[in-house]
Image (cartoon, rainbow, N blue to C red; front, side, top):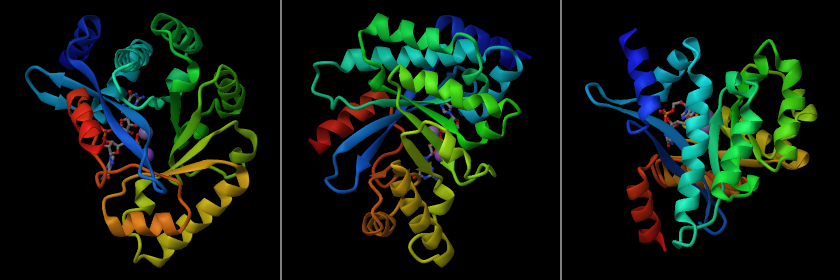
Length: 256
Ligand code: G
Ligand code: G
Ligand code: MN
Ligand code: NA
């Protein structure tokens, strides 16, 4: 319980929770296409704690709405701060958990944040992990996503290919992007099965009018394979790790 009260304290004071940003790049012209915001907890005693460890804790203890709303506000505040500073005006993508999607005030939190920071909804993309679709409330996912997309938020399915869900949902859900899970990228270009799966996913996405972001790109050989296969967007350690704001600004300046 110690960590829970510390998380509650961190949320109330704000200082220990920060967003890191990982850029996404276009394979055709190397331009920056977007940023994924990844939450970090800089714990005064334990050091950097991964969201994989504290998000489940937040969900169990009723802190997820507050944490999610904090992420929304931080990401939008950062975008507003960068306005007019020469940073590329790309969307920031935040991760949304199943619990947040069904939380009553998600739309209000988004609308409030956009209004406060004077930004259009198109600048804040929403990533939902594929396993959200396995949630028992999955029947309600389509109308929830439609409402968010109608407001102008781009929507992506994260970890695509690992959620054990049916492809049928692609027909019914309003989506903009698939984020191909790094499990399929890791062994490219040599692994014949992964190569076949990636080519098939790219063809399917094209037919459905969806963009694909390949995740976990770590080597030039993986990038070459993906480019030749017609993949539009990439994210991974080859380009940049998730970066602090200062490191991202330096990364951007070094590239421009
Ligand atoms: O970067 P890292 O390995 O720490 O990310 C671990 C997991 O935590 C990823 O699945 C990522 O989607 C998730 N995650 C990161 N930031 C957030 C966030 O702000 N909200 C939610 N719900 N999940 C996040
Ligand atoms: O589930 P989600 O895709 O949101 O998780 C993002 C996680 O993937 C973050 O923890 C991030 O640090 C990690 N990540 C980003 N790029 C790479 C990469 O090239 N290789 C590996 N192994 N992990 C990556
Ligand atoms: Mn993600
Ligand atoms: Na992923």
